Length: 122
Length: 108
Image 1 (cartoon, chains in turn yellow, green):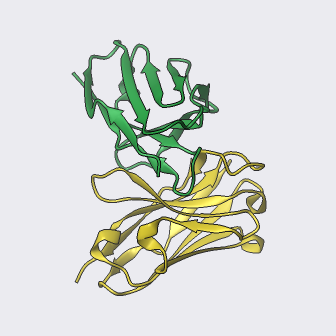
Image 2: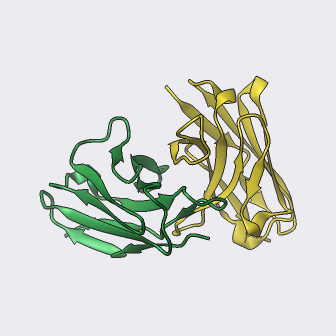
Image 3: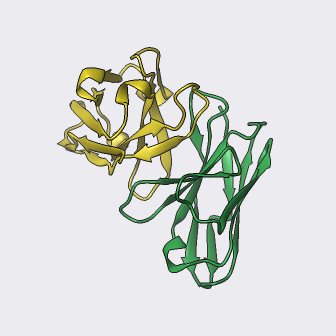
């Protein structure tokens, strides 16, 4: 069974940093592209970052470019999101999500973690 | 950036009735559209991809159609567990992968 478990969320002050982790199990993690998607309280879904199975390339939504960094450790079946210079508008539940298809980037997301809440407030 | 517009924002339906949800893209995305279901406090669940292919384990009462810019998710004979928020997502033009704003299907 595919499992994705996020951790690392919490309360942080504006301008602060957090590192989110997503531990994968039940599938060949190193063969799949991965994504981070967030959802602000009561709002819709927003894709924020993508990383290929090998670690490059990576993509980011404009609002987090230069502040967030996605990475992965295939030996440890783990995905990461380093978040710096956090703002109030970054407050959201952050999900890691697996790409459905292994052989193309033209793919939806077929497995999601339960999410981890990041709250940015003074 | 591809913008997806879902309608209606809220759909009130009685159990056992059908529901039709719409998703429109601001330019052609071929058939690279997915639908997700999200219940309160839960992660999204993939229902449909390729506009019309049901994901593993999804009941046949869920069906998707459309191509290009106009897409539809149809749920026949709604069950209690189907009351949720539904999002469409395009994965044809990236980055960014984009989602619609969601349609809430509520009990009438």
